Amino acid sequence: MNKKPPHFFKSITSLSTFSRVVIFCTVCLLLIVYEKNKNDFRKDEGYRFINLSNNQYYLIKNNLDKSLVDLDLLGSVIESQPNLTRNEFKNYATRIISHTPEIQALEWIPKVTKFNRQKIENEGKKYFSNFNITQKKDKGMLPDIQRSVYYPVYYVEPYVGNECALGFNLDSDPKRSFALHLAEKNKTIIATESIKLVQETDGQRGVLIFNPIFTHEKTASRTQEDQLIGFSLVVLRMGDLVNRALSKNSSTPIFLTIYDVLLLPFF
Image 1 (cartoon, rainbow, N blue to C red):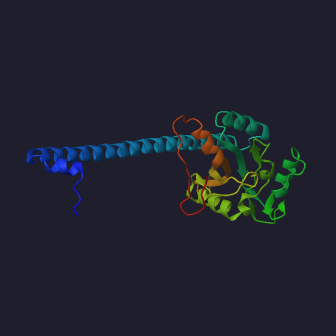
Image 2 (cartoon, helix red, strand yellow):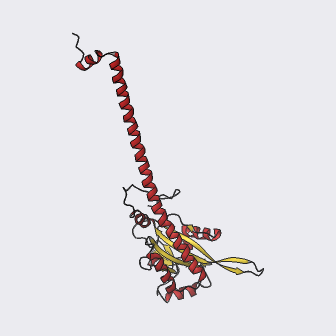
Image 3 (cartoon, rainbow, N blue to C red):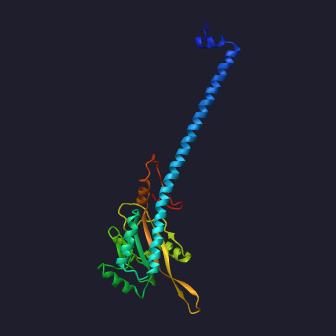
């Protein structure tokens, strides 16, 4: 027994050819409009995502740039006053950090030879009775071994929260040593790879940025030769830097991960 076609199809078949063409064109037009609106929506969302991403990128970059400016400023102060006292350093560093709170610490890292290690440690003990040039071991911070040259953290501000760093010979750690010697060689600002700070208690990754400081002395041939006297240094906790930057952004948040392309994620 043959079934009768549904009423809808029966109605369609009863339409004229012209009416069928009109319906077909209308359906096609609706599909085209739908696809166009869908593509426009995707483009709008894509542009919105790009704008949000760029906004967050520049907020982070601006915070990092401010830290580099402060590092360079501190370096200029030390270069013009190589015998800067601890209190003078504290005053300069405190003023700098007051408007750049994302900085974990500012430090002065002098070049210390084995011949004046004892003198430096004695000077440090005038302010901190347990001051020593140290290295990091599994058991904690221990007096460093005998070396020809040391690069200890001699001044650090703020001191509170960075106590473990005071006296730490940065040349005793391979990652820090690589960056400081590269900065000396190239006579330019160099950052370490992602590291765990000796003062870190919260699992954040950090980075040290070295700014080499030279004196310009005339040699026997009366040519000027740059002599490294040490480094001004800025310590950054990447989580703090990123969070402070993005706290200025009131737009819709996006998930963000910052990578050192060769190593571990920074944040």
